[in-house]
Length: 242
Image 1 (spheres, rainbow, N blue to C red):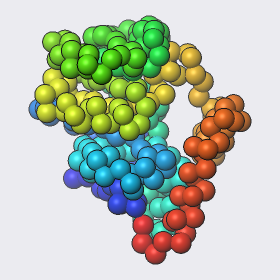
Image 2: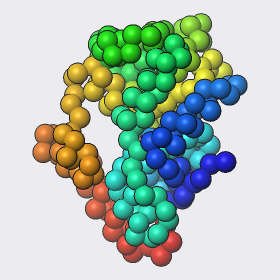
Image 3: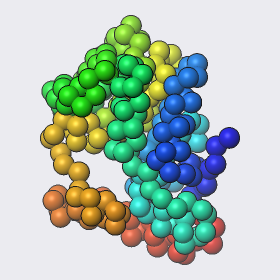
Image 4: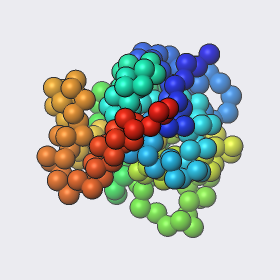
């Protein structure tokens, strides 16, 4: 039984990284394709206007709080969401489990060659994982169905999409009923981190929930996107029920 809290109409699974990992193991034993969504504060705000995205999140099989703002909002409104579970950490746990069980993965997204670089680094750490295939995110829309057909021919256990939100979530949902994979998860920049083309914030920033601030220092041009966090918190404070 899932333990879910709703923040601005968006369902978020409560629990730790261990709880999320255990849920992943359950989903990998189920028939059909299960979808994992990793929303942060920005995605929750987008879902207020994008009803298709909201529907996708509501129907997902696991929704983790990949944003410290969601935890802050929960604490302010006493919703019971006590800790953040990042997509980067969850992907690492999925990879660890796939390595133990010798399962296969497919990496879909990123700039040209990024998925290949990520696959190479994943194999260095998890040599028992089977890399079923890779595909960058720079493809023509008319080729999308061919890519899905190729994935279905291979039938990997796990499909990681790194196309950016909400594009990656919408692609999984669009083909969910025909995808011949056990688990499909939108992991955004996690593939870049595995490829070595992006670095995660130092551990101290992670522990303090300030990864967003670290990214802002490194990439100041992202400031417009970062403004969503204070807007979100103001909305939380001024809204009686989130």
